[in-house]
Image (cartoon, rainbow, N blue to C red; front, side):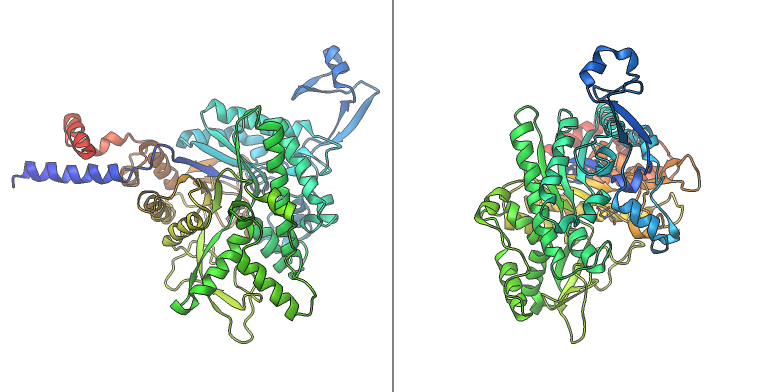
Length: 565
Ligand code: NOJ
C-alpha cells in the first residue's frame, strides 16, 4: 500500500468517524444557571411608587418618568402605591442567618452580579454559540411579597431585557419558573407542605407567562423537586420533618406544576406556541449486586418515578410499587393511612399528561443495597428507611470536587433508556449535567473529559437505543453560588473572578471545547479543536474543516461524499 493510499484510508476513517458521531440536527446545545446562584442584587430596586391608574399616567407621560413594561413609574401623583423592589427569598434569609453553614461564609448577595452584568452573560453565551440558555426567575424579584398584590416591574424588566438580548443573538431562552427561590412569607406559611401553594404558584406562573410567553417557547415550571422535597426536609435545610413533609411537598409540587401547565394550555398556548415540563431526577440507581435488581427498580421509582409517573405514565397517579410500600410501612409505624398522600380521581386526571417533553437533570449514579443493621441514610443521597436501603458510591468512580457526585457516564444512557421504557417515546431535554472543579484554573481538562464521556453516552442513546434526546444543557454557563459549598465548587464553562468586583468572566478550555462541539456537532472534531487550542491556537471557534487541512478541500469533499454512501 502506498503512503498516499494509506493516507487516504486514514483520512476516510477519520472523517467517517466524525460523521457518524454527529449529533442530529434537532439536537440543541445550551447551558444553564439559576437566579439565586448568579444574579446577586438580592435587595435591588429599593422602594418605588406606581400610579394606581396606569392609563391615566399614560395620558400624561411627562409626569410619569420611566415607562416599564407598558406601565409607569410615577413619583408626583397622589394616587400612587409604594412598591418594594425585590423581596427576600428563603435563600437570602438562610445565608444571612447561617453564614457559618456556607463554605467561606459566602452569600449570594452579589454572586456573579448577573443582575447588572447580564449583557456579559449574553455575550459569553453567544461567544460559545449556545443554542439555548436556561435561566430561572427569582420569585420575590417579580412578586416581592410572593403574592400578586405587588409586581416589581423593575425586576420584571430585568428578565424581559435578558430575553430580548438572547433572542437578538439567536439564543433560545429556556425559562425555569422555580429554582428554589421561595418568597420568605410563603415558607413561613408552610411552603411546599401547605396545599395552598398550588394556587399561589399558579398565580406566580400566570404573571410570568403574561410577561414573557410572547417570547419564551420552552418552560420548566419547577427544578429538581426531589432535592427540595426529599433531601431538604430530610436534612432540615429550612425545616426538618422527614416523615410527612417530603411526601406532602411531592404531591403539592405535582399539583402546582399541573396548575401552571393547565393555565398555560388554556390562557397562553392558543396565542403563543410553547412547551412545558418540569426538571426531574439527579441520579441514576444501579444494583450493588445482582440480587439487588428489584431494590434498584424500587429506588428508581422512589427517586424519579414519584415525580414522573403521575405526569408521564398512561395511568397517572403514584407508581404502584411505591404506593404499596408506603402504605404498609406507614401502617407498620402505627399510622392509620399512608404517609404518601392519596390523589383523588380528579387530581390524577388533572396531573396526567401535563408535560410536553421530559426534562432531565442528570449528574451521577449511586449503587443500592439492603441496609445493614443500624445503618440509616437520608433519601436520596445515602439511603431510605422506607426502602430499608443504603446508597453508596460506585466502586472505582472518579470525582470532581463534589464527592456526592461520582462520575459514572454509562448511568446517563441507562437512565435515558429507563425513561423511554417507562413513559414511551417522549422527547427528552437534558436540562443539566456538569462537573465541579475548585480553585482558579482555566485548563479544566477533567471537565472536558467528563463532558466527552457523558455526551458519548447520550449519542449512543440517540443512535443505538433510539431515544429521542433533543438537547443538552451544561451546568453551568459560569461559576456560581453552589448553595452550601458557596463559591468553592465551580461548575462553570466560564470562570468568574470572585476576587474582582467586576466579576470578570473568562473562558475555560471547556468553553473552547463546547464552542467547537456546537459548531461542528461532533465530539471527535471537538477533540481536534481542543488539540488546536492546546497548541495555543486560541481562536474561540476553530473551523471544523481545519481537521482535514493536510488533505485539502477536494479530498475532503470526496471523503464526505463517500461517507454518506
Ligand atoms: C442541580 C441544581 O439544579 C443546581 O442548582 C446545582 O447547582 C447543581 N445541581 C450542581 O450541584
